[in-house]
Image (cartoon, rainbow, N blue to C red; front, side, top):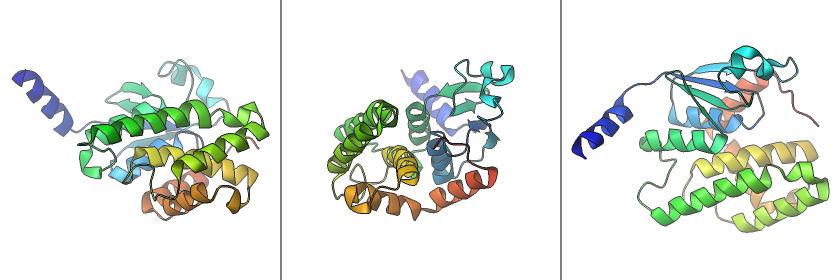
Length: 209
């Protein structure tokens, strides 16, 4: 047990090489933000949907599903936004992106991340009216608290990317989703979010209307 604990500690302190495959404005933005929040050095590999770069053999060899985000950790691929956010937050507790000492808060974080991935993310594909109802429920669930949990976390980053996209595409009135808009404003004030948005906008968005 002690040897295993030492091995885990060594793994956490060892420097790893990170490479992020992302498409500007897509779900990978959340991971991009987390990397900037932590201040980690990483190699950025933007991919173009329009040019079919996520379907090229070189990328499919890394992620056979051809999806972003994909994070290479010393050459080993890790996929799915929630899993990558969890990895980054747990590997770098100094960033304060995970409620380390509160098991109930951890469960709430998992609950929100699951809800974001399974309910919010596909909502638009099921029709505009359905999406409006789903986001209204999310607005109510969030309430008027500053962050999803009692403090800023990866759940906020995950939520932000989806509502940033939803609000930027449909421009619903602020009074429709007051809590989500207030959360959006707080996120937009964060330097890591600003840095990510600037970097991705400079590459160019290829998002559907």
